[in-house]
Length: 222
Image (cartoon, rainbow, N blue to C red; front, side, top):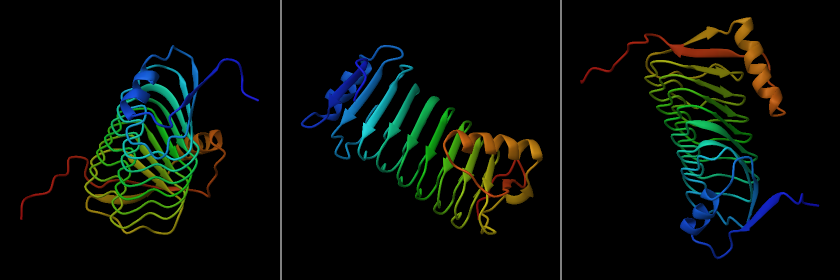
């Protein structure tokens, strides 16, 4: 039974503009449930209200792009560029997500409990990305800061051209990209990662980390 305070939006037959205009009228602390998203792209784009948005079903490209403050929960899968350029808040996806998850992340946390596609956390500056299963190639591409936590297999070229941040992993030895190296994680870092995972019902064996080999690295033209 739904709480009286819960606002329900049926997205069936709505355009993405109509849906996002409805969301932007949301009050601080409000709790919204979106039914029938039908894989719509750009859901909650630019939402800056500290509210909770629950989405019953899968979403398309750029879900939660440029959000600042909301908690978004997706009971399904997500397309490419989930949480693109997010600055604050939390996005949790119960299923899988496509390429570019967490691209350009400035802050907040993004949790995908299934697999992610390629280039997770590319160009991210801060914040946290958690991948509950496998991630594709070039995880952390051009990463500048923040942290990525991958519980499954890391795809090839992990940490490609990263200049900051950390990629924690518990799987087998990854194939590293340029300017990336593997180090042991400190006890404090492992405790920090464990707290993050526990908050989302996840767990992993002891993890190691990938960091930049040279934090001022750049590729010369060939």
